[in-house]
Amino acid sequence: MKVKTFRNISSAIIIIMLVCMVCFIGASTYNFAFSYQNEDVIYHGNQDSNKVCIMINVYWGTEYLDDMLEVLDKYNVKTTFFVGGQWVEKEPEMLSKIVSSGHEIANHGYFHKDQEYLDYNQNYQEIKVNHELVKTMTGVTMNLFAPPSGSFNKSTIKACFDLGYQTIMWTKDTIDWRDKDANLIYSRATNKLKGGDLILAHPTQSTLSALPLILEYFKLNNFEATTVSNCLK
Image (cartoon, rainbow, N blue to C red; front, side, top):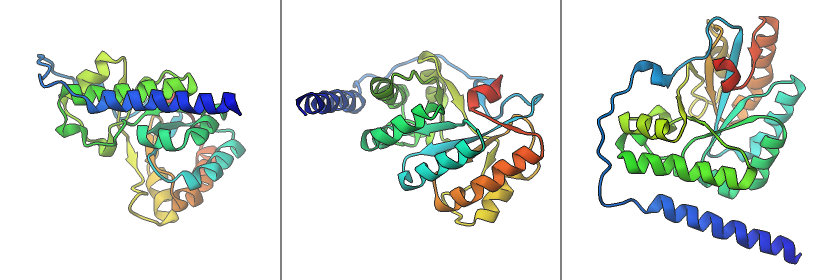
């Protein structure tokens, strides 16, 4: 009990230190001359392959994740979960379960802010603090970043580059956070599907209902569902 209590206190101290880092932004703004090319932001994987990915952004919806993991396991599919820092703090056990299930963990920022309106320092800290938080909790070193709501600016891309990250967008958006129709989610995920497609989803009841149908479609049409990293190869 004492050991567990010590670990909990240690984890809490680490989290507080990391939060202080993200809250402290220097008064001076980082100045740089940086322009990014289209290829610096990734919207699809290898289009010469049959690989596709359902990339799951997690900032809420924990109650659906156990069942989603069961469906993925049933189809022997590993995918990528982009996790937000505040969710990570609240749900360390679920994060550990996702990792132990063999899925890829990627970065979705700490505060789930609109990155387009952040300067370089703020963009950097949003990514860096979540990076260190996940690494401390799981030992995983993330290198993929999905901007919340797909919003970013050149400072976001520069911060990603400096931290050794790739900026990941998507090819198809299920819009499952808004539309609670499993059939509609299935249609958006599978319509005119091509190799290399990255399909954005979230943990919702409708997505859970659609997930086995989507994975069955992949299987019947010779698509390999995999992680974002594997899809890029």
